Structures are given as structure tokens and as C-alpha cells.
Image (cartoon, rainbow, N blue to C red; front, side):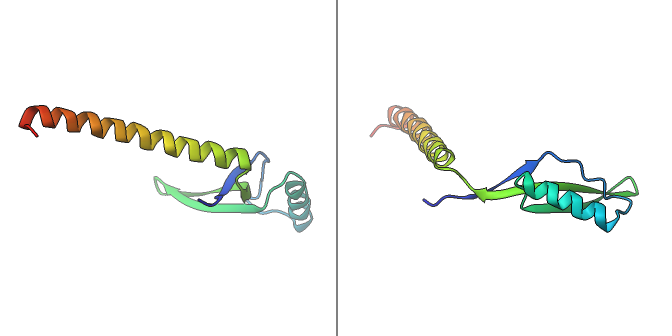
Length: 99
């Protein structure tokens, strides 16, 4: 398995909804870069006839070695739980219907 790219929200308020001066935009982008942000997601929505946008800064990076190991361990644990459940069901069916 390969390491996955992960996205994490960067906690920084972006007040760009009603327009923003270019100097403020540059200041915000510089601050975000210092915090490790790599992307700014701007999504638009509509609710009850009113449109609004959501602006979030994100950091995108490959998972660390520890995150990778944790993910692989969790996958293996889930596979074992599934296998145990299926074997238990198989044994019940064998008892019910014979070999």
C-alpha cells in the first residue's frame, strides 16, 4: 500500500465573503502559508433560496509514517473482525444445514 494524501483544515478566519482588498488577501495568504496551508477551498451553497459561500484553508500532505502504520493496522483489524464474523456465520450454517 502507498501513503495517501490527506487534507487538514487550517484554523484561520477568512473574511472574504463580501469582497476583500488585494493587500488584505495577500496578508491572509502569507499568514496561511506560514501556518502550513496549501489550498483555499471556496464552496457555494444555497439554502431556502439564500446563497452563501464557505471558505476554508487546508493543508494537503502525504500521511506520516505513524499515520500510515495506524491506517494499515486499522484495515487489518477490520479485516480480521470481518473474517471472524464470517467464520462464525459459516459454523452456524454448517450446524443448521450439515456439512
